[in-house]
Length: 310
Ligand code: FAD
Image 1 (tube, rainbow, N blue to C red):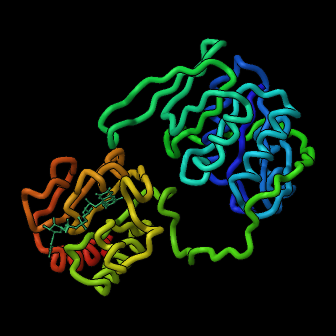
Image 2: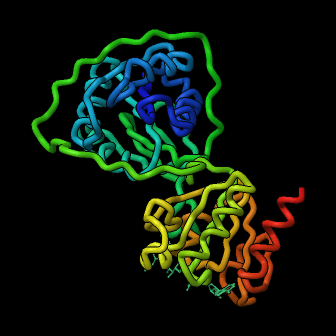
Image 3: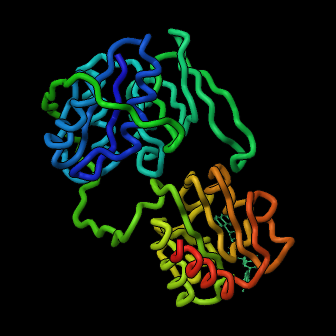
């Protein structure tokens, strides 16, 4: 049995959840697949999930804490008898998957790019050294693994499944008193097919109006470098890179971004990379498919105008 922990936003499954379902289907020789929806409004989300999986548990445990997620996932493991647990890779899952692996006495493979099985082990690949190296890993069952987002096409619906509520005895631990969610505008950065990122070379927070306009024309999400975030020009939620988000859009447009290795770690797997920079020696040009050497304050308005005419 394989158990998939399904990421959702309280209303719907996230794309990453369907990617993990697709991964679990690839390991079909290990037996049937069940899912678990953990958190709030789980019955509704589990109904959606049942279009993809034969059995979905709904664990209503309230707002997120790592302890609760680990406990709920473990309850689902015990109920289902799963020997493999799969979840979406990212900041949040990193906090509870290790706890779950400890409870299960299981191996943990994080941020895998692809996974397979020989019946006794899970074999996975993942990036290492700022995405410069791909390493292969192998862990004997039982195994908890996470799938790096945007590495697997999302699963298609199958025959309808059933939903079962899952009782979880919650640990006395951290209690959430208040949650301040970030103001979400426009397209989600990690799910966008086009990302327009502005760097310090833009010169001011006001110059991001042009970045936002271009993003609007392209239906893109706005990203930022750490230099920009540290300067307080943009929120941390927009930071791309080693200590920010990892994105893998079809097109990544870097405006006045130097292309430091730490920035590249979050975007160098984009399908196409285009850059605008006044310095022809800027490192971003070494990984760019298309480049314009020029002043961003001239190129950006010209780009917007040209694209609006299309
Ligand atoms: P700069 O390096 O200042 O580059 C600005 C660029 O704009 C230059 O290439 C310049 O030629 C160009 N420019 C200037 N004016 C113009 C103009 N008018 N027109 C066109 N081009 C112009 N960085 C991240 O982005 N994400 C991370 O997650 C991250 N994590 C880090 C983790 C660690 C541990 C460390 C040490 C660093 C990290 N950094 C990260 C920082 C990283 O090393 C760089 O300092 C940062 O990415 C630089 O941001 P930038 O390209 O906006 O700025």
